[in-house]
Image 1 (spheres, rainbow, N blue to C red):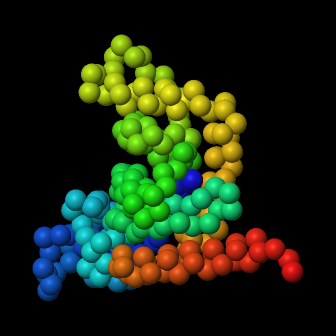
Image 2: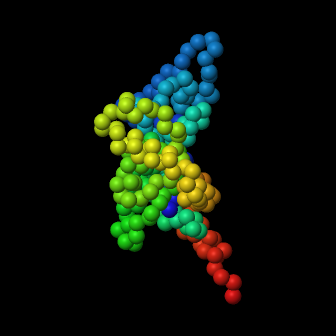
Image 3: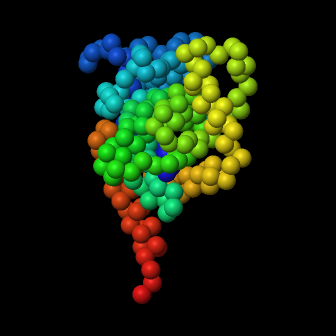
Length: 235
C-alpha cells in the first residue's frame, strides 16, 4: 500500500487573508513608506512588506485554508492537504481525505485512513510506502506498533544514540530500522509503486474542504475507472 499527499490550492485570493483581529469595516493597514517603497495600484488590498502567518492571519472567504509551502524557496499560498491511500499492484486509489494544511496533517490523516480501511475490509496492509514528508519517528513507531512495515523515504540518521532522550528512544529506533530497510527489494518496489497514483490529483482547486473532498473523490473514481479499463481482459 502507498500513502501520498497532494496539495490542493484554494481558489480564494491572497488578498482575503487578513489579520484575525480585524472586523468588517476596519480600515486597511497603511503600506510601508519610503522613497523606494512599493506602490500598489490597489492600496486597500496591498500586503507588500507585511509578515503573514497562520497564527496572525486567516482567510475571510476560506477560513479552513492555511498558508502552506511545499518546500524551501517555494512561495506560500492558501491551501488544503489531500492525503491519498492506494494499493501497489495497480495503483488504484482506496481512500482520500482533505485536511487543513500543516506539518503533521498528512501523517495523521494516513493513520486515520488506515484504521478506516482495516475496519471496513478486515484487511491490514503488510507494508506502506511514502515519500520524505512522512519521515517522522513517531509515525514510523505507530506503524510498527500496528504491525505494518513502513517503507518510507528517510534522511540519514546521524544522531548519536547516547544523546537521544528516553521519551524519544522508541521513535529514534524506528527510524534506524527504517534506514536499514532501504537496501531491501520490498522497500525499492514500494518506492517505485508510490508514483502510480499522482497523475492529476494535485490540480484540484475550490473553496472549502468539503468541496475539495468531493472533487478528490470524483477524480479518484475517474482515475480508477481509467485504470480498470486498461486492466480489463481483451475479449
